[in-house]
Length: 98
Image 1 (cartoon, one colour):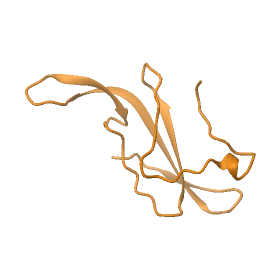
Image 2 (cartoon, one colour):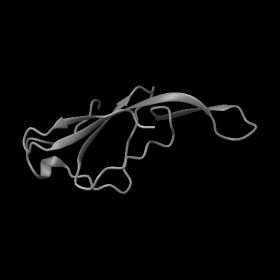
Image 3 (tube, helix red, strand yellow):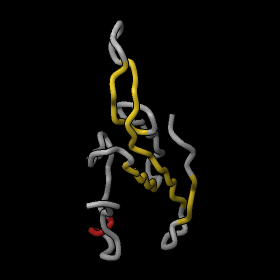
Image 4 (tube, one colour):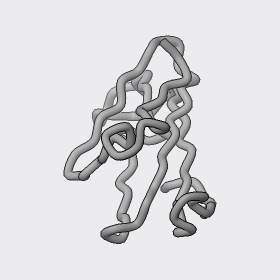
């Protein structure tokens, strides 16, 4: 289940932006019947990660916060994701780490 999100206002267009924070954490979960729990790394306690159902044309920001012990890489399936730096040099992809 996705965490609650908040809606903020785009300062340039005045339109709404849905903002989510997803935490990458280590957790245990039974994966196979008759076996013990496995140690997994997932998103807000689920693996694989959450599904976002976003209305077409709706601006959305998803911030992944990595609390796991190793670096993580996040990728998308089935989503058109524009790099704002192509549209406006003031914007670019961002990361909290290196």
